[in-house]
Image (cartoon, rainbow, N blue to C red):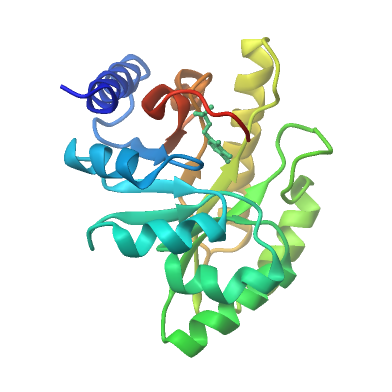
Length: 231
Ligand SMILES: *Cc1c(COP(=O)(O)O)cnc(C)c1O
């Protein structure tokens, strides 16, 4: 068996184990294979191993990979999107998890309107407190943004995405995931029309904590494809 397929099997088993351990519904945590920087062959190998959900962080890479993959592979954008690439992103991706401003939401909405497409989106929230990270910061900012984004007809807000702080302290990591879950619940009660129940949180180093705190999608790169030279 190939290394990638082997890794996939192992990660899927670990996700299942954590799901049971924390009394989550079996199958309620999806696996996004983060294939950024990796060659097409690596994605095809993962596809061969049954993987269908792929995460990319650059439109330039997706331009090459998306058309080369089988139809039923789905692509999620997980990296900051620049305005001038919004139209291309709207065309290529099945879901954009990195909506971090009202402005970019509007650009994607306009592009989707032209394509006659409804895009699933996540609100990218900065839960790490690290200034270098993108995303909306704090309850007020998320609420103000949602007021506007909810009226955009070609966007469907399905959930919230966050990245834990880059620290060793597992409790601090768990706390940040808990913050995102609570923010989601607050926003859903504030906007009854919202119904955004998904939580994209957890990566190679912290997916167990994320599953414990309610993640519905873990985004895993290096544990599947090996380490990366950058990003
Ligand atoms: C790169 C990346 C991941 C995957 O990181 P690993 O540590 O390799 O699992 C997950 N989420 C985002 C937003 C990323 O940019």
